[in-house]
Image (cartoon, rainbow, N blue to C red; front, side, top):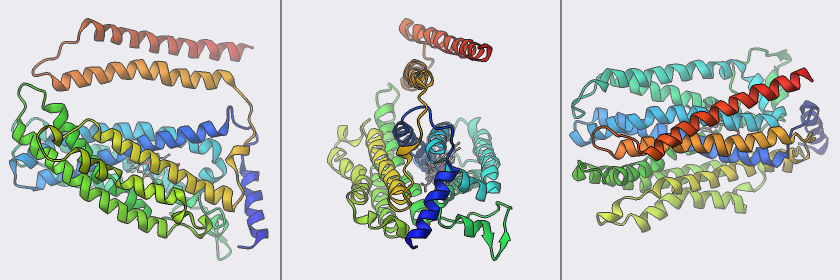
Length: 416
Ligand code: HEM
């Protein structure tokens, strides 16, 4: 591309920008976008990895694998919900500062954007269908029914992920949007095509599910081993599978990462060999390096709660690298800088956002997680302590107050 073509693209991007501006510093949106993307992709990987174990377990004629498969299904169905809920956050942030790119990419593939929801619903149903077909069965070592539903669910979940991947890829190619919209002089309003993708990049994000679920398995042993009825032979088996998956998975993901870096768009220049590109590669290997040092054999050293935080640190580093790649292309090559977005400061909504995050999210989540944690480690029925009960009551009050202020402020602004 020559300089005048680049200028044309820069002008187009600035013309598409929302003239109303943004309500706080744009860097906050990008920072939160990176953080929430890291959480989203961690739960996506947990959901896919635990589903893989469930499928392995279902097809293997082995009692321990079957038990493990049934246990991981419990985590998988919750991870789908969390992945979806946390997926909304980066969606909101990316569309605020990269609105020209995100909306152009969405409109160009509108049918897929809408299909995304429908496919996701069917994926969810298929997983729950499989779950309900087998949930009544007390003996988890028996061959489960309806195995095909689990395969269908994973295939549909991967399709959903591929749509997201394609939308993220298309936004990096503003120079091609017009060609995609108008082919051989004919305008294509259909939105039926996914125009850009990089299979290495997609495979990389998906393959990280292997070390992540490995981390989950060693955490599972750590969590369950304190119960009075712990079956240590089974838990040791789970942790050994986990260690293997962390080691092998990190290497597989590393290979895909290198392939992704070798195929980044030309507009990214020499990003692959930059400090960021190399940092991403080191992050991918982090779980394997940590596991080799920390999980080194003897009983105590077979498991650790640190496995998942380590996976999160690796994922967060990769999320930063992924964002730097986008910035390098859109700012470095096309001179579209999200940092110069017009700011129309709105302290109330900015403060409200962070307070909601810290207080509402903090207290309510602490309550839910405490109950789930304690219930998981209790044999029989769990009865919460007076403190946990108070935390529950406090959570209800905080949510009620939040809803009240929402309507009070809303009516005040409306009546002014
Ligand atoms: C449950 C199945 C899902 C899977 C397997 C999945 C997978 C992925 C993958 C692989 C990426 C990275 C794409 C890339 O950078 O190449 C991604 C990004 C993303 N996903 Fe998901 N996703 C799922 C559901 C969702 C849902 C339900 C939402 C939102 C409601 C969502 C929102 C996002 C957003 C906003 C991004 C980042 C876009 C960007 O900043 O470029 N995802 N997802």
